[in-house]
Amino acid sequence: MTPILLDTCAALWLANGSPLADGAVEALQACDGIHISPASAWELGQLTSRRRLSLSMDTSVWWDALVEAGVQLAAMDAATLIASSTLPGPQIRDPADRIIVATARSRGFRIMTRDRPILTYAAAGYVQAIAC
Image (cartoon, rainbow, N blue to C red):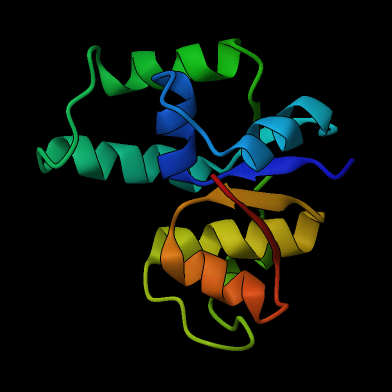
């Protein structure tokens, strides 16, 4: 099955053992690799530095543990960053979400998320997504 790209929120829920939708669990079990964008590292850093998110450990230690657990770092190149600026369809405002969407589109990933703008974008047919 198609590889999955975790949105930042999905990575947090997965790492914390939070319950996921049945379809999301099945997709994770059947997928051909679980990936995360480097943009999520930036987003986590922003959230923790602004005290909007509290982790039980240093953010970089948390990130390293996620990668060591088998989540693969998705490639992010200039073409993907440029594409994030010119996504077709309804506008996604959050810069990290735009990069995550552009990464999924360019690499053929399905995004796992609860983020409503990304799910709406997927429902419009611009990217594949799995609600978690």
